[in-house]
Length: 479
View (cartoon, helix red, strand yellow):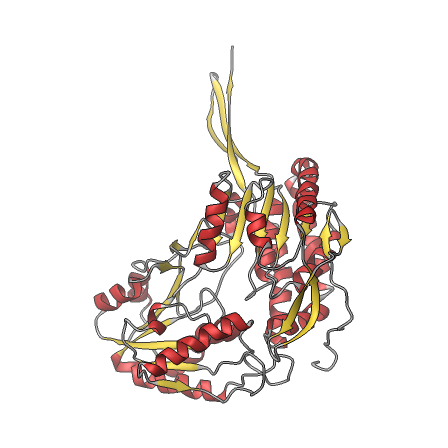
């Protein structure tokens, strides 16, 4: 499979504006994080091209809004079918630009196609407050207009699709921007979906660091849907405030998992490891602080270290690779800075297999053995394969420590006693809590962060309504 799934270096990548393939005089380089070398170029959208994309979306909005929701849903299903036809191509491209091993890359592309189909089943409700001889009162939900969507580099296909699906289903049109680090799969999505959708409904543009602020400040958008860091999310919110754009912000997390003393260590160790390190820990909801009861701490630590030692870190296009590189140099340097700080402050680092040498952005799988609560590796979100393990003895104490964060995205509890786990989960200050599992999200279940982990929710009917506005209609009836 690895030999047949290759990327053609001569491929020309284009934006999609008003249903048409669009180039730009300027380009940005796309780097393969497994070797640090540029292998493709993407268009660098100009301000005039952004204006054209917004205008195309605005022109397409009235007809799309007036299309029935069932017809829009049917087109989402066709988009899912179209995406499935390109799984092999997009899998190879995904690994080249994002770094994730091929099997996991395929899982994301295929999963995005299924998400489109599942999200097509969502429907907003109309609420009737009164239906009497005197009057009829209903509240329905209507689309907002043109949506600005900005997706990140860690899950470039999934986190584009989870914005596209509800926004379009709700009757909005969209201009979508991928990360400059991972633009290629998303640009191809624009081309693939243009064969299904009316022109202007979904426009996809790419560009460097200047494009995001240009979009969030653009007066033609009614809403911004952004996934990324909390620091950038605050800047997005500032730009949105200038003309009161609605926002949904899915931001950072420093997610805590609590392991109770009754767990079967051998049974849960692999799941906990995956929850912390999948995608080289570049997941907003990855376990980033692991609190383990002292009675099982050493057994779980040693089992996780054994798994780390057997985990192959390397080029995602090579057979047998389990974890790929950090996606970009900026993030790689940040993660390595955290490792350097941990070493400089005398923390105990337990590391897995050696990483490849060369120019790739590889970081060893690292467990930090019971560091102080005040250390940087505990207080900061690494977004890389560094997991601090911390001992606890008292439930009240561990809840205080787990909740003592400016973030509140997700958490997990591991226990053979479901009721005991539920009691802890309900006191965790996060938008999602998993019990005896992790990293599970559903198209029918809302997902969002507390505290500085976000504003609003995604997924489910609640996420659909983030792309709509309530409209109340009151009808007087006369006898």
